Amino acid sequence: MANDLDAHAKPPAKLREVYKEYQKLKPAALTNRPDLIQFDEDTSPSNDQVLVAKGTQLPQELRQIFLDFLSERPEHLEDIMPVRLDQSPIYQVPNLPGLLIYPSLLQPQLQLSLLDRLLHRDISNTAHKTNVHLHHHVPYPEASGTGVPGLRASYFAPTSSDLLFTPKDPALHKPLTTSQFLQKKLRWCTLGGQYDWTAKQYPSDAPPPFPPDLKDLIERIFPMKAEAAILNLYSPGDTLSLHRDVSEECAAPLVSISLGCDAVFICGLERADGEAEVAVMRLRSGDAVLMSGESRYAWHGVPKIVEGTCLKEMEEWPGEEFDEWRGWMRGKRLNLNVRQMFA
Image 1 (spheres, one colour):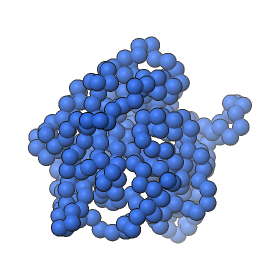
Image 2 (cartoon, helix red, strand yellow):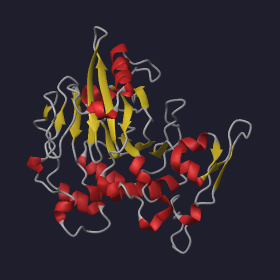
Image 3 (cartoon, one colour):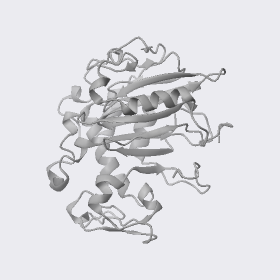
Image 4 (cartoon, helix red, strand yellow):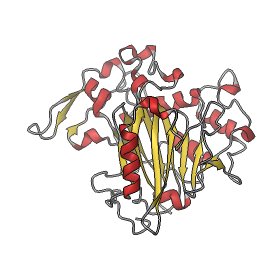
């Protein structure tokens, strides 16, 4: 652990109060909340709780970074970066030093490419564990006719529909079908360093490699090394309780990228007098948040997923090729939280 913070400690009372308030709030009430940080289509903030982060900017070669990540060059370059860098400001939250917001960082084509890799490729990788591994024997779909050793098919592929996830203890858990796995049971997947959510620590053995294309994308944009990540999957009604990420052996920033439906994100720091500084923001698909400096160890959580807000271009994912699952993303939110494990 990078410091003496307790991963099992309870969050400050003020943060718990704000969290519960937003958890109970109806989605329609979010529109006029004066304390909620929101960004419109041109990435202008809804209130004065955030300021442009002076001295912090996106890399000049951002368009090339995006082109290198995509497997196919877009027909129109504005599809991946429609504005100039000076028109894409990064925002800071002054009362939470080091908390930076990158509204609309990833345009739809990049989001879809990232989504394909995470859900078709990375959750089918035997090195990446999920919450379902805790209580079930997880079968993996086999790809046929690819000629690539070790390459696996997607769980969304028709050939994966008859997989059965058998319980480790039949007295406690029931078998799962692929449909049950994808619709509701799959809640998280770890990439790279395989974080143990129960013990709140990383295993002592060497971690599996982080997906190289994701690693390249993250490290060329953000001031950190991509060594471990947790992919969280949400449906409306799901939440993520307030917590701090304190198990890494360094204080390097962590970055969070949102895909799919909107989410309410709460972040806060406890002051010396026992009170807390709190920021509440609405994160949309393509937004990124960087937690650095003092905010690296801030309390944070997700009290609400906003139903019916999925990015239009993402609503039909995974599309015609996977017709049985067409429209799966319409009611989902994914969050890719990437960390550096070692100094």
